Amino acid sequence: MKSLYTKKDIGYEFSSIVLILPLALTFYFLLNLVGAPSFLLMGVPFFLTIFFIRQYGRSEKVNEYIKSVGEIGSSLSVLTDVDQVTEKFIMKSQELFNADIVFLFNNHNQWLELDKAYDKPHLLPKDTHSIRLGEGIARMVLSTNEPVIYTKSNDFKQFSISSVPDEIESVLCIPMTHNNQTGGILLLGSNRKSAFKDYHLKILELLGSYYIVALEKARYVTEALLKSERCALTSLYNYRYLEDRLHYEMERMQKKDIEDLSVIMLDIDRFKVVNDTYGHQSGNDILKELAKVLKGVLPEDGTVGRYGGEEFIYLLPGFSKSEALEFAEKLRETIRQHTFSIIPDLSSDKRKIEVNITTSIGVTSAPFDTDEAMALLRNADRALYIGAKQAGRDRVAVYVK
Image 1: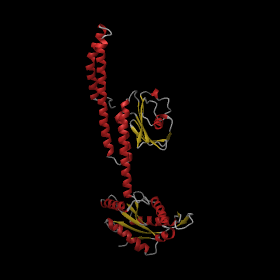
Image 2 (image 1 turned 180 degrees about the vertical axis):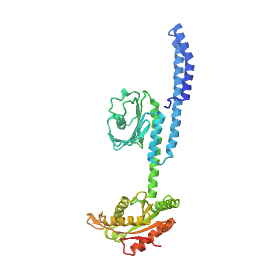
Image 3 (image 1 turned 180 degrees about the horizontal axis):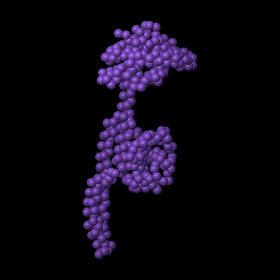
Image 4 (image 1 turned 45 degrees about the horizontal axis):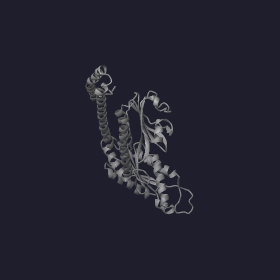
């Protein structure tokens, strides 16, 4: 078990005793010899000495806490994954204050949902139950937006806090506020009485501010990454990502991590007619619905993305040419049988109508057809337009050298 006191703390306490003991003994003998006047002679200096020593010790501890908080803040700032930021914040908060439990709640329109929980010595799986405002310590802090500290269990037993274990004696709880909005509540608990001091509130609030900044940064990076990798209309991967992924999968094949790599390219038949008949917004609705269909049948370890316009691509690592052809045939039939509901924006009648579409599909595979990444795309494109489109549409064609 980790010691609650460092060598520096023990050294400080020993030095304090060495300094105070002579004063205490002198004060004791003077009190017996002189009586009440000894308070003026030694009492005031004695108590002032104790006060200043304690204040110095407290300031030293505060400085150590502030230094630790700064280091934790720096470590959080380099993370770009939201879950990693939160998990590290929870673990570092526990470590800094030697807490036995740590609860982090998210505020959803005055309801608290438990986001992350630590119960010594492990992080717990996410609990999906919500806690309503108005009951319990966390709910009270959300209601008042003021931090609280309790040094013994009798001080907070009046609150119904079923989520806090019975053995908890001390509680530290703060609102997590950003831009005048309380985004959540952080609660720390200890099995020891008087485990938390008043200045711990400010230290924890400082640590919380570092966490909020790091969390905002991680969210921004995640959103920026999604925008750079995803098609805004369909939420599928875009061409830029597909090209990078294709090179990555080709390298895996060349290293013998996978034996085959197949590419399937599909195109909506006569999509211009759809746009001209129903309007471009209706065309966009069909593209978005088709994207859901494509994702719904995506094989494990595969990747699907929008190549451009009404063209889509599957990257299928580990699929031979015959396996890719079989998948493509099932995909074509699935799309053919799917009914798309749209509201024509070129018609004055805004009622929903149902339409069906067909697709033409090209299939190619490495290393059977080529061992070069971009050639694989060109092969799929050639199979699509020469083998499927020009042959009548609504069919699957394989690349032929």
